[in-house]
Length: 451
Image (tube, rainbow, N blue to C red; front, side):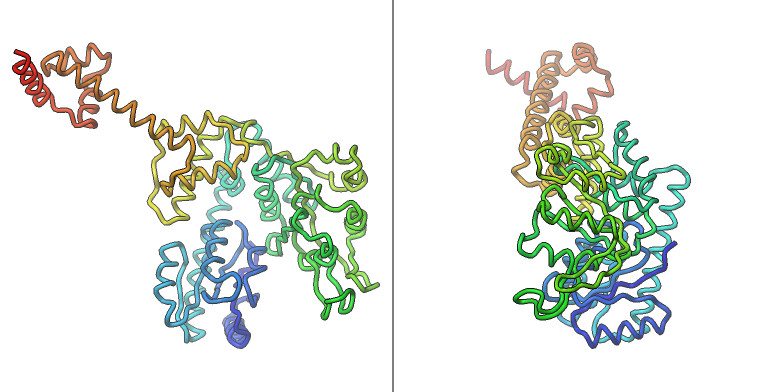
């Protein structure tokens, strides 16, 4: 198992430094951060430690950081450090999944005690996951990429085989199919799991800053570069670099990136010195890169260099049989995320979900699950399905009530005429609040009014 680690996040430099020193004297390995920007790069299903974060911070605050950590793994312990006025907020965070909170001022011994308990809990979680995987039971990869169709079974097998290697990998799939989930899974089961996972959206980087963002720069490299800066490639050393939608990378930059892939070195802008780069590259694409090569928009040599191992993530249309199972899992996850009790999904909703097309794939299905859990309007055909269910139930109640009236409240001819068992009739009468004596009295009253 990887070395246990504390990620300590606090924007107050003096407090951050003194807390880290005290924890290291207590025998912990501590990595400090002045903000939450890069913390999520180290979090995954195999992360072997805990996160200690201040609640009040500029940029991403501690509450938001905790929520994003829970999206990656709900069982990573997050300990919140609060000021006196934040106690109510911390209690709310506890209800939403925080492991514990500690109020300022605190003693190092108090914080160390809370961390030790959190570490023990995290160790048990990871050991349990490992035992399940060894026993052939549902493991982390299956939890993140569920599905019983053969195409998903094959995908999980390939992830486990490729993940243990250091091979650069190309992940191909439609929008929302789960390409980044696959990339994170590859990272988390690799020997690099405890090092950064740096995701770079090639389509979102501004063209005039993309080289600086990736390679870094020296002071004076261009107007406004007042101090040296690490690029994202250098920041990810020892870990995994995800190049999301690599087909959007500008053509002239592709040649420079190809050189990085081949030589595993970089040079910051404004510098002639090379920096060794120990990283694994994973690229994703929603477009056919071979077609992009044919169209002159993507370098053929870069495609061949990236294509050491390729994983195809299927769309939901390619695994329709998995949709009901996946939706129910997403509902469970959404209920946990929003602090709600586990919810049953009515059969009519499942039926509607299974018949729908999902052009947005898992991302769209997740949004539908969130709306279902929150009870929001705008659920599209989910809301229509609920309305249909109500109309079907109303029709069924009317049929049973009419049969009871027609047979004077005698049950045997009712369930025989309807083709159901006596037990089923009792259950439906109870469900719809039907009382045979009341119905008989209503029938008699109607007959008196007619005559």
